[in-house]
Image (cartoon, rainbow, N blue to C red; front, side, top):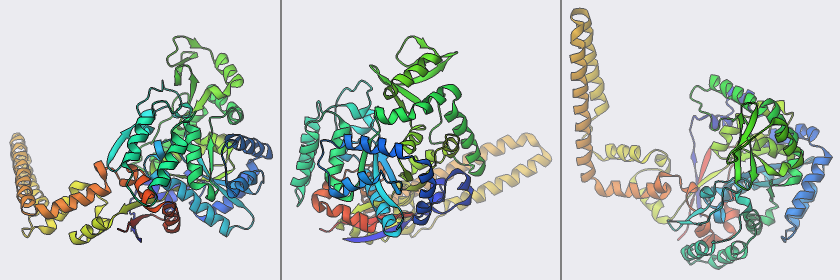
Length: 532
C-alpha cells in the first residue's frame, strides 16, 4: 500500500495551534508536542488526588465487568491508581457501527500519541482513553451509517433520552442492510461476526459501543469510558451548584470569546454559553434548564422551581443532571488524570474558548491537538488523478474552483474576465470623478451603466465557460468523478464513509497501517492507495 502526505496551509485558528501561533498562548496550556505533554503531566499530578484515582478505577472496572479484556487493557486500568500515570483522551458520539471513519482516526491518533509518549518517557506512564458522548440526546446524528455509497438509517423513537441508554429495539433491519452492503473480501465474515456479536441485542448503546471498540482495539489497551455515572457526577456536583449560584461558565467563557476575537478578527465562536450549561434528565428526556425570573424553568415542565429546590436536587441526585457541550470538558478533566485532548477542528475551536473557565475552577487545562486525517483512494482513482495532470493537493478546494481552474488550464483561449472587470471599473471610476467635478446628478446614470456592463461581462463569462465545458467535457467529467470520490456530497470522505468495507479488505491491518503512517502534531493529511 502506497502512502503520501498533503500539507495543510489553512490559516484557521486551529491550525495556528499546530503552527505555534504565539497569539494563542494565553488561550491554551502549551503547544502540542511530546515533550510539552510529558512536562505538562507534572502539573496534572499535583491536582489529581489518590481519591479521584480510586473512584475512576472502580467505575471503569464496573463498566468492563461483563467484557473480556486484554492483559494490556487490564494493566492500563490498574495503572491509573499510580500517581505517575496519565491519560490522553479523545471521544465521540455513539455513532452506529462507529459511523464515519474519522471515529476510527480519533482512536488511532490517541493510540499513536500514547505509544510515542511511553517510548520517550521513563518517569511517567500514559494510557489512551476514549470518551463516549453517551449523554447526547440527538439520535438523528448517530443513527445513520454510510457504506457502499448508501446511507442506512436506524428508525427508532427515543423520546429525547440520552442515546447511551437506548436499547437494540428495531435495529434488525439496519443490521441486515449493513451486512448486505459489506463487500465480499478476506475479512468480511469477521466484520459480520463483530456486528452480530455486539449490535444484534443490547440493553444500552453505551455497552454495545464499548464492547465493539474493545473487540477492535483491546490489544492497544484503549479504555472506553461512559461518563453517565452517578459516581462521577457526585464529584462534579459542586461545579453544577456553582453554575446555579454564579453562572461561572457563562461569565468566563463569554469573556474569553471576546478576548479571542481581539487577537483573531475572523473568529466565530463554535458554541456560545447559556445561562445554565447543564441539562436535566427525566421522563421527558434530556432537557434544558433556563433562568426564569428569580427561579428556573425546566423545558417540558409547566411549573417553575426555586434556586434552593434546584440546588437540593443536584445534591441528592447528581446523576439526573448532564453537562452540555461547553461544560462537559471540565467534567471530563475533573474525573481523568488527563494531559492531552485530541479532537477534530470543530471540537478544538470550542475547547480554545475554555481555559479561563478551567483556571477559575482550579482544574488544569490539557494540551490540545488535532486528530490525524486520511483519504483512501483505489488504483483507478489514483490513475485518474495522474491522467488529469493534477496532484492530490489540487483537490483541496471547492468543486467549482477546481473545475474552473482546470478549464482555464485546458482552454487555449486565455480570457481573463477579472482583468476585464477591473479595467471596466477603472474607466467608470474616471467618469464618476469627472461627474463629481461637473454635474453630480450624472453619477446615478454612470453607476447604472457600470452595473449593466459588469452584468454583461458576467453573462459573457458564463457563456464562454459553458462552451469550453462542452469542448472539454470528458476531461472535466474525470475530474468531477475524482472529486466526488474524495468528497461525496461535497463532504470530506472521512466524514461520510464507514470503515466497514476497508476493514473487510484489510482486517486489523487497517489499524496497523494507520498507526504506522499517522504523524501527530503535523499539519499533514495522509493519503493511502488501496491495492487491487
